[in-house]
Length: 174
Image 1 (cartoon, rainbow, N blue to C red):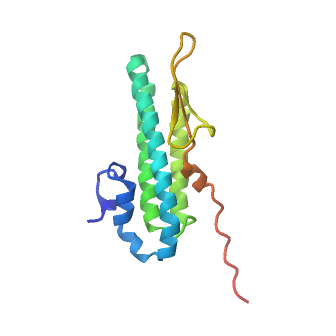
Image 2 (image 1 turned 180 degrees about the horizontal axis):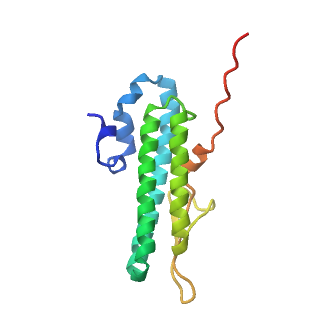
Image 3 (image 1 turned 180 degrees about the vertical axis):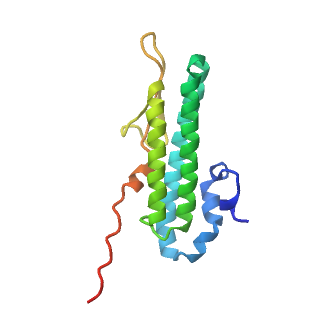
């Protein structure tokens, strides 16, 4: 059974299992797989965690602010789109021979755009991205009498992978 072709979201299973069982890996060399998969798995797990933290904050915000249902719905849709983009990164990563594979890089660019859309919407309710926040954590700032609650998350590692330089074209032999 190829998990990549199931309708169920792969991130509900685990990127570790999905990448380990993916059929496209058969054509890759062991060295390139060993170099690529850990970066992809770590990046996907990190991004999934960050999206989960934002989703939990949005749910809490929705309960406290029922009048913001339209904004919350837009953010939840953007989070779902970002999760689909993560699924695409996993699929492209399973078939990639290295981190600079064109399909993988396109999937990473698509995820970057989807994540930027999430943040653009979520900043309206107090979500911020900061390089000062350690990986795997989020900082919740409780509401006060003068300020709303905030959530500060780290930038996903996948955004750094997406910014990797493109491969230089091979020069023809003379």
